[in-house]
Image 1 (cartoon, rainbow, N blue to C red):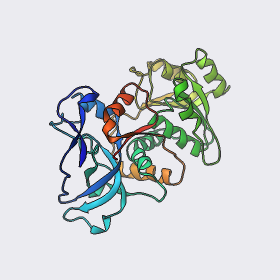
Image 2: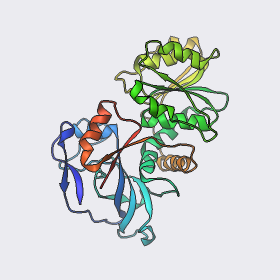
Image 3: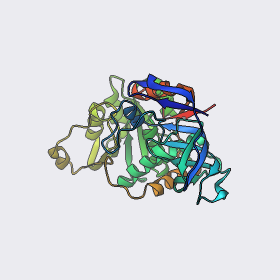
Image 4: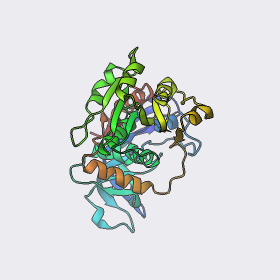
Length: 328
């Protein structure tokens, strides 16, 4: 089979397409013929040997990849043969060989795909989507809310905008640059509702944000960008508003003081590092939302051989939505 193999730590070009032996499922495992493999920002950190402290530094050579969707080709001992041939998606762990034509997955991690859900959309749901569900569980919204979503052209921000629309909230979706406009302009709820969109690269973007939010102010900010964008959104919150941080793709987190929070009775919280005991339940919620059409994941596909380009797109913040590798 063809697989991406990494033999040293370094830049994206250490990811090389090679011919390797297909793995054999052991007890409790299945062999998945991969139709789509998710690419994550953490994959790039691991590739450089600088992964998060919660993960061990991998041994080389390795095949990266944590999220796969495809069909079950074979099952190991103690796994029901009824899985064979089924369309599935699984989050198989950060170092588990997803960038390949075939990958092993724990049978316990499998989800059968809902009808009508594509392999690429399923991969977006199982990783990015479960994080979106976690963020929404921490800070939800309803018809009474005005929600600002930063980085709405990215995989996570895009799904959060969909989820807020499906809850009946009024949404302002932010993006950075004309090249990302189309990705955000395409967001629409099942009822036809659409977010107001604001380009944060425009000189007058804060004025446009204020106009979009309206006189009462925003009640919720979903913040994965940080920096000055996050601060402007924080300032747009009304008294009693809620601001949740789930990343800072700009390179710096929101800067705020306790006095800032107290002055307007705000809630400032984070979805990062929280203990989670129900990841599978979050995955199920995400897949169900995609199956119902409440979320239409934005996906950018790359051929498997172009894994280096996929990593570069994420690292340079030029990707749109969830980045997915597709074996030939």
